[in-house]
Amino acid sequence: MPLEEATLDYQVVGDSTAPDGTTQLRVIVVAAREAMISKYLEAVRSAGLKPEGIDLDAFALVRMLASADEMGYDGARVYCHLGGITNLAIALGKSCLFTRPLSTAWQEDVDHTAAALAEEIRLSIDYYLDQPEAPRVADVLLSGPGSKAEGLADQLSLLMDLPVAVAEPLGRMTVASLPEGEDPARHTVAAGLAIGAAGA
Image 1 (tube, helix red, strand yellow):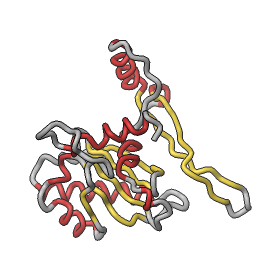
Image 2 (image 1 turned 180 degrees about the horizontal axis):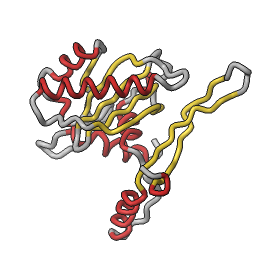
Image 3 (image 1 turned 135 degrees about the vertical axis):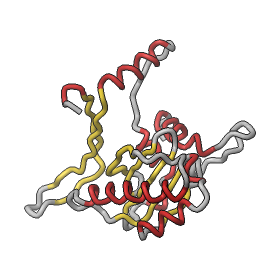
């Protein structure tokens, strides 16, 4: 997108030492179309609410599903959320290092979805690994309504030669408070956004 149409923000995700001994910051930069952000803000203000911040779905996804025991784990994890929009995030522990939306339509048959999704995930991993000092990718975690397609995780694992698992939709939270019949897989990102708003 043209820079003049973008809203930019950043988050420091760590630091490293350069060969000359200087400290370098690792930063993830987020760019969003200003028109899209304005629509969200207008909707919130029209409801009589005062916006305090805008979060990224990928950050919410990682926040919701990354376990505390993964901090310091030797390898990054790919999070792939198959919801209304297919989102991919690559994170080390709870730090999101790379994210992008994917174009794969997961509502189609499992064989087609697995092949298309595997290709998009592979391309994303290759792009991510081109970053200096990028930790290797250890595995893939699927979430969202599309993650429950029978055999999808196994097919992806074979196609990418990586372990692929399906996440507990709400991480370590219980689903007891959801209305009967409600699919918890639809609430992964929303719960992650709520946790972020609460400062957890």
